[in-house]
Length: 92
Image 1: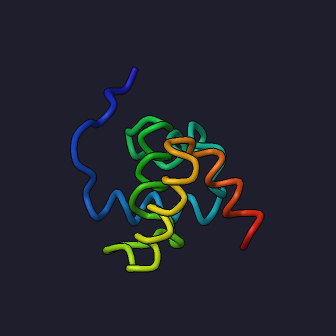
Image 2 (image 1 turned 45 degrees about the vertical axis):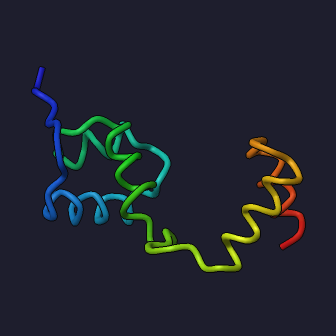
């Protein structure tokens, strides 16, 4: 069995992962990990995509509106994240 790579991702690995996600979509992570030759697990590929590489991911600080909105919804529902997300999706 081939040794899985651990540790920080390289820029080359990021480019490779983006290419394969564009080819096969962002659902079949074990398949993408295998065919891409990255020597990373499907879970590692998924986490890298979701947390760092996804094109819709917003980088940087929250706006003052976003900060106020988070505090407002937290005051209303506490730590019930699913309730807050459902409320926000309905009221888009």
